[in-house]
Image 1 (tube, rainbow, N blue to C red):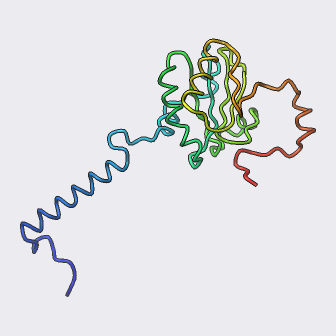
Image 2 (image 1 turned 30 degrees about the horizontal axis):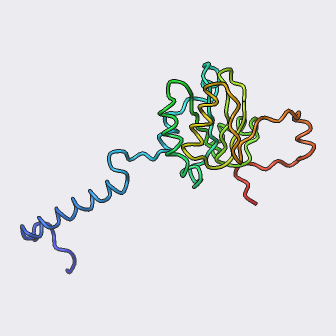
Image 3 (image 1 turned 90 degrees about the vertical axis):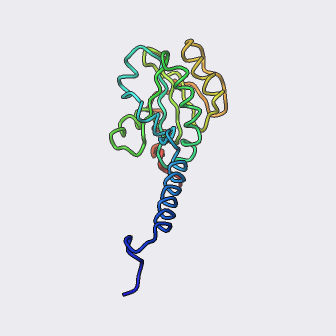
Length: 185
């Protein structure tokens, strides 16, 4: 019968070579998966995230990011948002809401999420102050969160807006078929 030699038929040098090859592959795999910090920034943010209702009712300003695991733009912004979250941890809550989780459908509809990443900014009283659609740099996130913490108007960047004063009925009349965050047609 032909095939691979059994471990008992390998020479000591072959066994040693096999051991070093296996160790080398394990080290390469470990490093490719992020080493000791294997969890991606988006995963770290999601894991550390408070429940949205808890964050909106604890007296601290809050940023809610509507995201999806598959969203390249969300993953691109995650390191900057993680750094911002760490810098403002005692002053601000950062909450992640995955648009693919049916648990959050009511929240997605309440805040009219129609694209991701979408950041919604809330003051310490839980009142929405504005939103941002698209990727933000670390500097932009710092400016936005600083304004939120200091209870100042949000800085004006492309894709950042304040809340409209139009009633929901007016918005629905102008757009009877709203587009959801996963609609890309």
